[in-house]
Length: 228
Image (cartoon, rainbow, N blue to C red; front, side, top):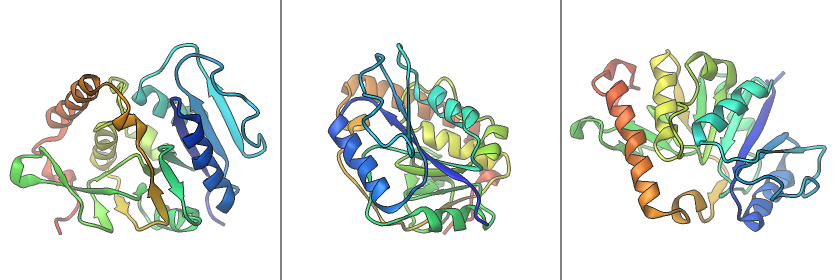
């Protein structure tokens, strides 16, 4: 019997794109969905989606990416969680292949990822396609929930998503976990979290997140996947 799994979305406006994302999920799977509407409270209607599949939580004040991911990890009870961006659209059902990867010995599985580039001293990553990887991106990032918690979860200092998903990936690898990139029937629309935020805020927080990666992990090549 396959393990239990849940999809977790962080919504920050752009309701029409959120509806498109959730509709694509509902077209192909009955997997439960948790949405956290980040920002001011009550900007998203509780009855916007079928409550038998989709639950919505809201707070008066916005939370940073790391704290939201940890809330998902702590408050849900499923064996696996998929952290997914609302820009990601289902073209078919990716859940069976995702579960198969997670139950074959990997603690994380995702759609996009890569290997740390050692030739430039960990300052970038390279997409090598399907296979074992060092990092996975949170466009679609499936995790063994308990393992991710034991690895420390996401860094609460990460206010912004960019590079924070890489830090979480490397924390899982440092704890002995393995990650795999797999081809899945997904596509990406406009990534509002990148393109529709203040560029100075984006760059400042992206650099902060990546500097933590360098401080925590650079040089610890033993935690990395085999080079390919």
